[in-house]
Length: 217
Image (cartoon, rainbow, N blue to C red):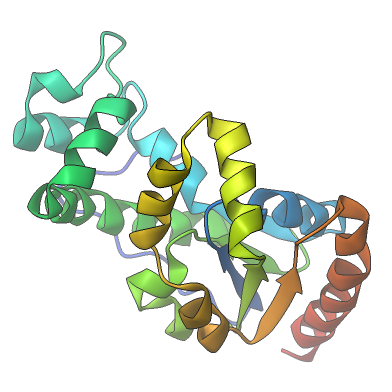
């Protein structure tokens, strides 16, 4: 990843005319699984969670402003942001959450633009967990794809995957857009309530659609 000046980020290159999709879903919906299936079929997947981790890794360009704002206690011994400590802090303090977002979101947006410019797939998929909450992706992509699943399925998946209790998972879900809000924002929906095999025909159908959109540009 290119290292840019965090104090003066260069605006990202425009994403169009390449066809692009914003992929989102609630925690435990299976966003990464679906994104991987699209990548196997030739889409270029750009994951904002991966970009955020790179920005907050040792030497990442978000470390200096995070240290300046939150102090050394939020930087671990390796020089990365202490994700567990920061997660607990911003979860209990909305003002701190806004401060962290004010640091990270412009940097993520810039790096996402550069990643889209460099990507070589037949079309672009931006995997954005908080796409609906951020409010500006509708103008940045051609379509919004929501990975949908029953909330009980979400609960069970996250409890098993992250060893969290049901109240903990419900608290996380409460900070995200509701299932209905995501569906209202969607141009396309993939249902991921069951086995992985059930995803394949849904991905194939949308992949063909997105390639057709890409060719038409």
